[in-house]
Figure 1 (cartoon, rainbow, N blue to C red):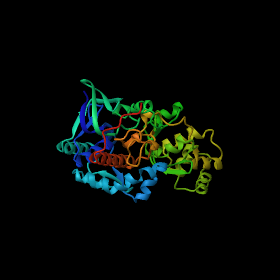
Figure 2 (figure 1 turned 90 degrees about the vertical axis):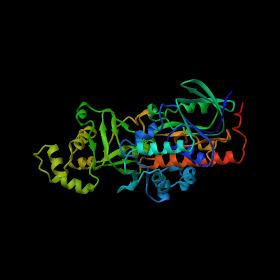
Figure 3 (figure 1 turned 60 degrees about the vertical axis):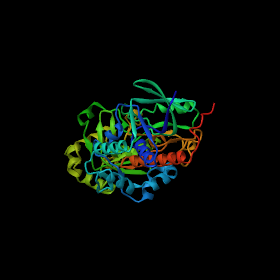
Figure 4 (figure 1 turned 45 degrees about the horizontal axis):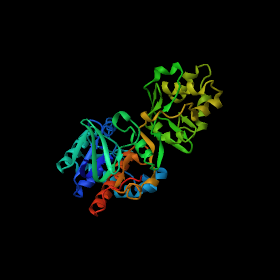
Length: 404
C-alpha cells in the first residue's frame, strides 16, 4: 500500500526548500525527498567561492536578464524580487552586503550557514526530510521511489517537483527526470549547456599559461559586449566573462576578444607605430600596452601569422577566438531547456497532471550568473509552493490519474 502524504516536495535544492517553506507556512505537513545522501549539494558548491544570492537592481533591469522567459518568470520574480531575497536571508540570521557591482552576498560568503539555518527552521516546523530517495516515476497517481531500503510508493495530496536541470550531475542535477516526463508525453525542450566554458584545442605553447587569469579585456559575441575576467584552462576558456557570452556563442555568434578595451583603434595604431622596429614584437607590445604574458600568448595563438602595424592594431582590438563550441552539459554551471512553459499554467502546475507543480531549473529558462539563477529558483519555488498549498486548502481532488 502506498504511503499517504499531505504535501510532497521532490528535490532539496533552493527551489525545493522554498516550496517546502511555503507549504509548511500554509499549514501543510511536508515530506521532502532527496536522491543524494545530503541536501542542497549544488547550492553548497555554488557558495564555495562566495554565495551570490541576488543582484540589487530595479526589477525591469533584473527581468531583462531572463531573455525570452522573462514574461513567464515575471510574476514569480515580482512577488519575490531581489529585496525579498535579502530579507529572507536576514530572517534566517544571515546578514548580507551589496558589492560595488550590485551583487548581493551573505557576510559569511558561504552557503553552508544559510543552508543549515534553513534546514533547521524547516525541521523545527515539522518538515520531514528523507535522503537516498530517488524518484523513479509515476504509477497511476502514485509516486515511485528507489530508496536505500528498497522500492517505495507515496500517494501525495499535492506535489512540487524541483529536481534541477542537467548540469553538475555528481551533485544531483542529473536530468534523469527528463525521460520520465518524455515517456509521459509531457512537453519538453532539449537540454543545452548555459553559463559554460568554451572548448579550445590549444597549441602546446599555451600549456605554460593554463590557470592564468585574463583581466582588463572585453569579449564580443554578436551584439553583446562583456567586460569580465576569465581563465585560460587546459580545456579552453572558463570563468565569469566567458559564461556571460556563452548563450550567444551557443546560438552561433562569432566570438572575439578586445585586449585593449580602454583604447580606441586609432590610439592602438599610434602606439604600435611609435615603437622602435628594432625591438622584438613582444617587447614593443609590452612597452606600448603593458600586455601581460597571457594576453601576448592569446595574440600569438589566435593571430599568427601577425600582420603589419595596421592589421596588428585590428587584432589587438578584435582578436577572433577559434573554438569548438561550449563545454558539455556536465561541466556547465546551468542548463537551458527542460519542462516547456506550454506544459504548465501560470501557477506552475502541470496542465496534464493537476496537483503536480514544477519549480526551479526544471523549467525551460536560463540566466547569467550574478544572482539571477538563484533568485529565479527561489522565486519559482515559492510560487509553486504557495500555489500547491492553495490547491490543497481548496479541497481539490488528490493528484489526478495520469492519462492512459
